[in-house]
Image (cartoon, rainbow over all chains, first blue to last red; front, side, top):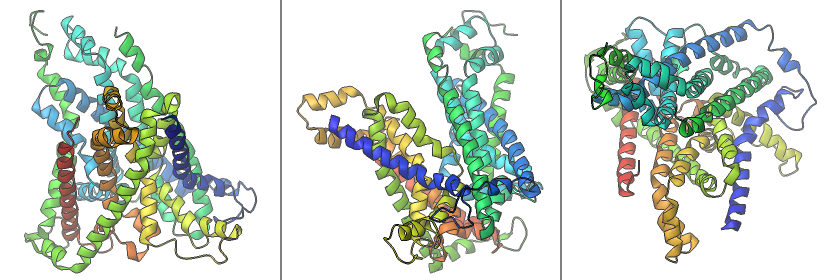
Length: 266
Length: 295
């Protein structure tokens, strides 16, 4: 048994290398003094990072991505909180149905989410726009926020909520003063991950963007020009670094305080 | 305010209608309008003819007849299924030992390893695919590394723009999806089952084959599903690393809503993809029941 573990450990190590190596090539070549991403390395340079400054198309796309990410993450988190809370405690077929349908986007390929919303926003006269992208990203992030909030609410002992209700707190008070504060780290975690999903999302946004592209769309438009590849790699490196930091923080938050809730429900 | 006495049996019964309405509203809007109604629109559009207007004209099955009668769509659908099937198999088979290690051997490193295998999940899909483009390109990383190390003398075109490139890239991009469901399934197997197996004289391999593997099948099926669904409809990877010989059904849908500009036909293709996925889900459900779902 012990020896199995050692071989498996080696396998896991190799797996992690496979998982990370291709992605880490992007930062590696972003410092390389050559248009080509090829060996041997041509020497260290920061010129590709310098070229990121003073690019109005890029800063416009960044601003769009940040605003859309923040609004979509707020929407997805709000929906995740309410959907999972009612799914767990609403005791109605409607709440259960909403809870089930909210996880449906996992079973729909992004291209179909994209075109179905494209038809919808054209039907209501909105057209491809930033609002359309926000709606698309709320959908894409919804299963994640629902799953995170659901498991957090479920981890709070039932007795906590029942005690609040027995002591005469209304639904609102119980939700706002008891359940929500106890789940605050998960709320933050859900928000951050929803933001990341929106910030990095490409498949759906491709159909819903009007004249104002997001950052992934900007990258896609640059991929046609071989000369701009190093700049794309510099930009990609920044995005990867920020994604790692946000995802890491979200992950820490998600586990934080869970033990405290279980040990000391009051 | 509540006029109910303090000794009401079930607190849930005190739910105020305003509270319920407010709490259900955001989810109801998103699920019914953005998911169900929007999918309904796709089905509606699929049954219409293309006259350039938003919702098309007339009702007919002509879009579906074209899909079924033109061998092109059979070829592309079959190719999408084969690519997605290979990707699913590759990700699940390679992920299983990782999940097994996490569940039974990781010890104190479990938290860190779980974090490391899920982290790529939260990074840009576009960048992960782009990374493979620079790896596989004619004057790219792999070719130049092979020439530098003397294994190869000439760069080869054989890497990029092949269906194999699509399979490798997709398998890498969706690898993190597969580990978590399998890990959860393995982790929730009661340890007493394993002890019972070894007490009854089962060798480690027998106990794996007869106890661990069947009990982890729900996780394996869930993992297969979450990898299969996004890959079967993918259009970005074929466009980036696949070349013309790797056009997938997602690429066709995308072009109907872009260059080809035949929305009703694109909608019909989408309906077909959803039907295929529904079929796969039903098969997975059936298999799940056979293995005795614990979810």
